[in-house]
Length: 131
Image (tube, rainbow, N blue to C red; front, side, top):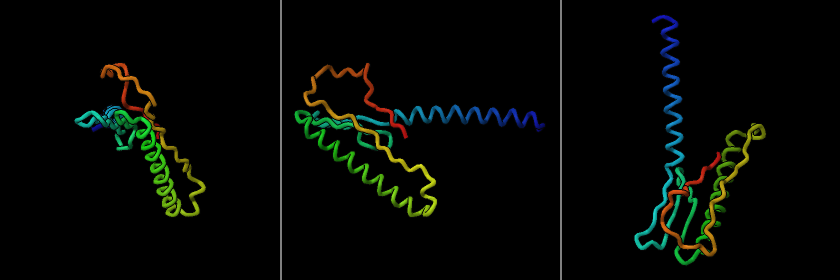
């Protein structure tokens, strides 16, 4: 194999890896799901990583909002715990690292949701999270 052939092969493999990585990212971003109980009283939406993004409790939007607030608080505390353990591992170098932890804000249910047709063609139930 000549150097030009090797380079062409390498560039082709690199391009394929980039296409695969782009497709993987796109698929991962849409890997979250929404599930509704059989009696339609509960609906949950989770991100690809399992994080609770939305909760709907039929007839009790206030309770759903309280649960989402508690979930967010628990996620923040868990992230801080992990960060504390990480800082212990890296020791004196922890000041050199960007350790700003930001937990995405879940969408809170409306207090007086208006029941509409279950057509979600124009609305996405997924919310992009930035890491």
